[in-house]
Image (cartoon, rainbow, N blue to C red; front, side, top):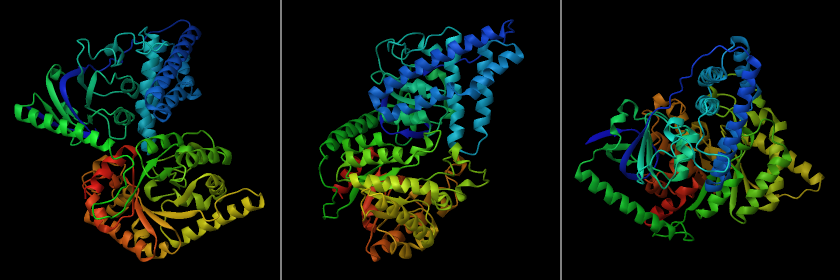
Length: 559
């Protein structure tokens, strides 16, 4: 038995035969051409075909997993249609008189290097995206057929094209896929009936591929590095998507243990289905409100499907991140109002825009910062650019007439920031009254506790607001002085640190002393190893991803 340790990106256990996918050969011949215009026409035709393929892929993903999971491929289409991208390819063809395939590959490499060098992790991720879409164009130019035809049928040589749907189960069996890496478009086309799990040498927990694996419910492990061995093809393996462990040629004891765990997990899932509609309450009667986190209006369906009691964090910045220009008041009102109406009487806590740091938007024209995590972000942008903030507040207030909306302010470090934000909110209320537009006059206001400063000032802050929600991701970062975007600091950025837990305790105690409730909306809220601690500290609310709601309810009800 060979044991490999990787990084868990999607929980679950898979046992089966390994199928190794060979790395795609991106090599293209550099040829000199006589007619640059004809070569540009070839490129444009191939690009249009690739855009059509992505449209089909987007529709397939939307039909199976929902609109919000398909938006990635809208971004891929926009990338192919970007004038800068086309200008780079066509410029290489015209200036160097090279064939379109070589020009596309060269342009992809140039853009990938540019994106990888950026400070923003969001922009860095685009390096993989531009390679993915460029590979698609090269395949068309080289006459390779994509696995998704216009009629939705599967075609072509799957492994050769880097598409894994048509090459993994020629003998009718299901397999665990081992690969150097998988592009998002590859992962989206997996046949879930034929794939048991994924293991890759490269990648990260925040990659598009990892997100798609979680959406598809596939156990997945990444980052096994040099332990990736093509010779594992055909061998039996066990992957533990929770611990990140991979066992190749497992011994009988390991097989027996993981078969037992897998059976228990399936039984547990059946049990969780029975928990819908049950109160989130301990055996001793301690009640906890169990909410869910969302990023887009379409996510509200998953909140209801998983029986969350409300939305504890609506990340409104995604309404800004996914647009090329400012979202208007009407656009935001429609988005917030849609969620409020869909949730009915259930609370919908909407965080005001949290742009900056790793979330950059071109049209904000933010200056480069050497340390953006400590820079111009979130509430600091809102208070210094009130014209942006007031548009959002007006939309939130208007939407509050259609449901149980609350407003939450991010990255608060002082009482004055809260008072300044409330002053702008009052201005928005006054304007709406003058325009005779309905809104909830008593809309609740809360703050996110994400910095040591806000913990220390929690007593004073509690006098200004209706609730606290602890953002454990940033609270861990700022308490331990560890940039959470820096992978080399993972061993030091321990969210279980006594310092972090003491910060949480101090916040809960301050909230209760001043008569307001306190919740957690960061990733720690779903950490079942800490649920007992949070209950003991008296937490009032936990807001987690929709799929984490029922497992967490089960733990609380059995406490």
